[in-house]
Image (cartoon, rainbow, N blue to C red; front, side, top):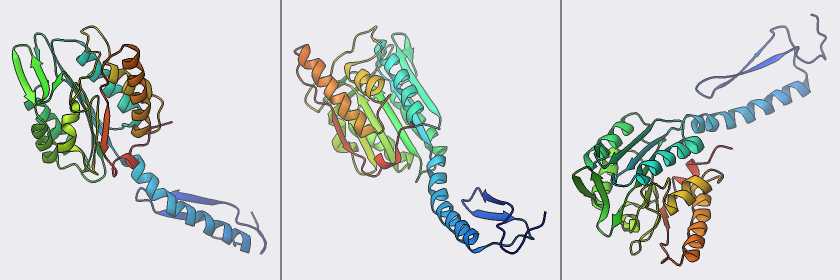
Length: 273
């Protein structure tokens, strides 16, 4: 194929390397006219500025750990399982670890939670990935109830704060669906850790029926809002309004769901379209 001096290049191929580098391949006998040179310079500039950021975003892993801690009621098993699946479908490209207890026993203990968080952290990029923890159970001002057969424990805010600190993972999200779960916020919430709770520190939450699939908050936040929201903040605003409306209709004392911290985490978690 012959080309004259004013012809544009017959073809050009933009190649994106794994390291974000952009290369230009073309026929050796092609001469680039003025317009072609400007166009290619523009493409290279745009590609080099966009590709690395997109590569980091695509490479970021969201690892989900979800525990249903109270085995005497099946709603916590159902909620832990369903919530993990929804989070993974909206944000995740990493592993999912779901554990729960039953009336006969189970492996969702305090020790197992510490181990699961450690194992998840070992497979993560500590600076760029996000650890997403979901806990669902009965709660009290002392913490979360752990019930597996005859085993009974209490997961306190200090216990959980120490576990999460030992992971070494910078960006974390913790969602706790339980009565009085706001007691965890002072020990956990900071710019690198977003904490969402079903209630404040002084009130119960509702919906813990044995054969239910979701608690009131779990249904509103995970099953309804998070399926459609673009961010966790948007999901929380919708869920809080749904919970308030339901509690008002049933004349229940307001549980006052809470969201705190996470200024550095929220921009990293944009839901898939």
